[in-house]
Image 1 (cartoon, rainbow, N blue to C red):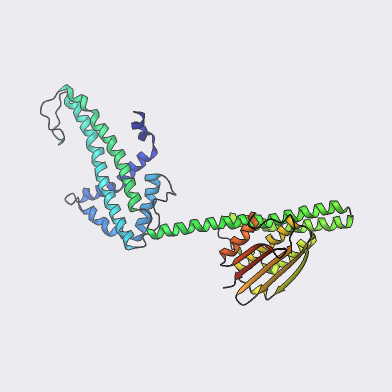
Image 2 (image 1 turned 45 degrees about the vertical axis):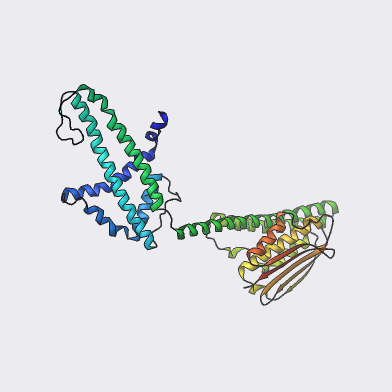
Length: 384
């Protein structure tokens, strides 16, 4: 019993009832003016449903009143973009009108019938109720009075569920809208992955430099070296804070451009930071770095940053050879250092995986792992 009465405690039961009643208000006005043409409103909604904006309005109403969820993906709030969407809107308006007629008839005649059954049981026979062809009153008719009210409950709840199912079918997103939603979802996932990489690369690099510098300063016991180490930690921390602010800006403003992120033009600053941490970098930069397209240059910077971070973290103060070459169609980036026992094997660690993923997203390729006694990161990114 409690399960059967549960719909009475739900707000959607009553908002659906109001949703079905709303178009009937206009129909009632029409019937008051022209009572001889009750079928005319059903014809008038045909051209109305062909208007693109009507589909959006009906979708908004359905979300708020039928599902009470303004983000229900099963109901579209976009205007009709194709003739198929317009025809679906027309069918929806006709279905809404039919269900509206049914709920209006039920809410008018079923309570009246319940009252008339009580009147018949007390000796008053109504002559204006077509559903009760009774000529002789009897007290037993009072026992039947709850039946119309039960039927009213079933009609209101049932029609509410029915019109909601019809709305999801006729006002649901089209194939093009579903594809667009899928693409948007994919873009969001890619953006989250990119943000995770940004945090890993920038903050990981800064923490690695800070740890290496602090350890070296403590081991050296030289005030001059300690001052240089603290200065390097300060510069690296400041750069990391700037990177963190950029990443947080992406989270706060989804449309914020990526142009504020560092590029390969700033590679010298990155290598100076690594040198200050003890790495002996031999850099060879050939070609105009400023002509590299923005996305390629930004991802190249992060790949170089992650590569140098891995050197400091796993190999320490070792010679590092950095080669960056801008050719006609390709950006080549290579970082090599002597292979040590602490260097991770190929494919381990999220940093190396991130390097390969960055290269793959740009249509390039990356190789990471041992090579002739060195640990190498070799990346080729297309410029077009």
